[in-house]
Image (cartoon, rainbow, N blue to C red; front, side, top):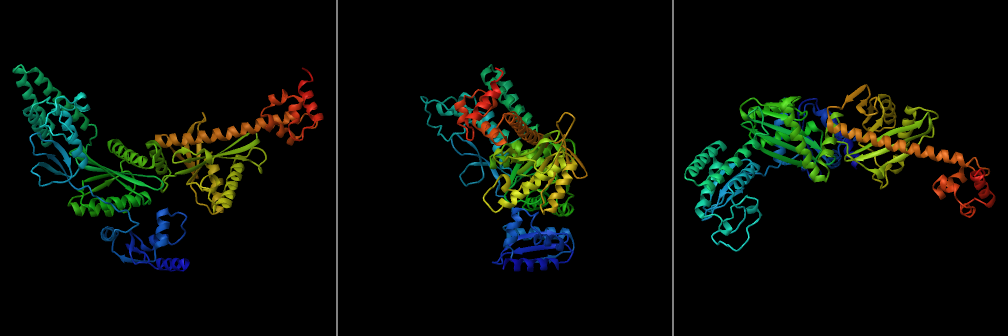
Length: 613
């Protein structure tokens, strides 16, 4: 039944026109599960019902649930984009990236009581309190209130200060000079109200106005010989100046602009948004999605929904990568805001620094969710961008060949999962078919055997090692290695990205090789460190196995010189005694404890090692 339905959907898609439009996927209940736009409907929709090798997990799941689809033709891609946004808003389909903005407005609240308190809140109640706002940014409100409480040493607790408890100890904030402890009578109500009013002025006005006012009060206190009061005001002024300097750290030459960056892991994506107003960072937001698609499609969907959901559109939007239907989105946002809007991918300078900082924050959000180090997440994301992969490779296999002039020819396979070595999945290979030193043929044999093992185990429960295919294969070598392994993969029907790791004259990582050239990674520090770590680890593992095998063969060769000891008996002796020295020092009775070693053989061994003692 499923095959018949897929055949029907495939035929229906093939007959679509090569024109712009919107397609609407529906399930058995006739409910809309996905809405998409296309410049050429036939090309885009046909991709869903062809081979699923390049599909994401989300697309595979969606295709299984598609019972039928409808489509609407438009004259331009811009019209398709606008219609897609409206239909997504109308149906909220299960498989679309749905942007839920429930932040609402935020307020600064000053309670109506003898000892008022300053709070950040998201609700404006009819409680006779004074409210300052509304503000779009809850993070800015929280930060401003926190700064005001610190500067003017106001309490954060819920205590009733009309009941002064002089015998109680104040909380930690008093001892670290962040509260004047009205709870134990360290400050009068008059002084407290004065601090509250100063804090309100600070929250309402600019920092410079507050500093000017406090400076006048400090001079008056000093002239009146109230030196303690003057010193307290001086501390407030210094605190405000310090806050002002901190606010200048993140700023932009453009007065009003947004910065948007995307970071993906295997099963999760995060958009981070930096909003700049009057040249200063005024708000940050982040959105986590479990639906993963290619970066350009996700940026397109996010930007469209983000600004159509009511966000003010700045004249410039900096992004960290390609945006599908970029010109159409610019046109749509320009019409919405009534001025020209530009989407820019910066290549250098301050703008690029802001994008990188935004992306680092997105990487941190995902790292917190998946319990990974921020640098690991950021490195995988940077690496995937460098290689133009659809998403970061969470499961990487790397291979290296090791031999000495063609003898003891071996290979090592190491695995990095989510940026970390997965040692339980490491595997060793003895090269069986290649005689002499031929790294290309050896690598081809190893990868072929690895695929053979996968085909034996793919229907089992093994989730690492040979029972799982990697998202990316790295070979210790140049484009020749890549070409021969890629050809093998294609012939066997596998579509796994394959790249080489190129070393310089000092045996250090220099570049990534691909068919037809190299990709420089020196300027991509996180990706460079990741590749270097992988290359060093696979080299260590392969050469370690080679040395182990060579040592074993040398020991075997030494033992097989003894009359009556062949390859198998030599191996049994080494397994039993663990080293050649122990065999040399073993007594006749100890040698007899090894299977197949009789008394004449035991005496031959002792004679061989001790004849000239």
